Length: 210
Length: 108
Image (cartoon, chains in turn green, orange):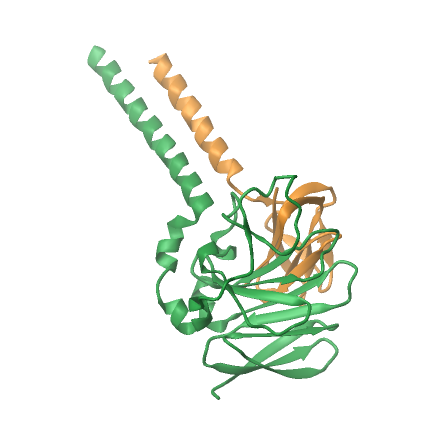
């Protein structure tokens, strides 16, 4: 009988230990993104998108305490670590964020690798909305990172639309069809392209080679 | 024996509490239908740091009301992030030419 109790107690302790370890592991993986970043940090994506290897400063400050009320946003910023619960497929590895040379008067953009291994594009406007500088973000599915990623953002109360995208280095231009029926040929520079317009994006097609 | 059972129960509750709080808040459920061009709102004000949207093979926009929105093509996740959380309402917009089903989440 005593042996039975000792065995049950030992089993209970093992179950508790496994649950506790599982909880700790879940929190660590969800907050750091480390679980899938090991898989994601293969050199393949940087070979497709050389912009990921840029050494230019990002110009995107990282904030570690988004709940702080003393710090007021003075320009676009991003979170130093993924918020708890962020989808690895839709969130960038912060250390891979690189500035893109998109020449638009009111929009800045960045490229990054997603935690799950896809390709992401981020953008921000130079004009605040209600005192804030929201960040738009689009990440491709990991298996479709060769297709690039496109992002369209609009600010509340403004008719201006920013459309930005990242494409593999083999692409030299992007043909953009807008909701007003017009089509624009947009040159690609360092894997990226962008336009500011008042129409919405309908479709894109890429032109490869120089 | 009773102590061990209590310990297992408490640890199990703590485990699921941790896992549940570690998830984004899904406000649409899994079969949230929007017609082409239609918006879908949470319909209450919350502290929101990020709004996420994904369509079932549909282009989608994820927005934060009174701030803006970001739109993506089929297969991608749209995210609109306020690095400094705001008091507002997450919403989705069907950016596709066809009606379809969407999933919306937000982070507090």
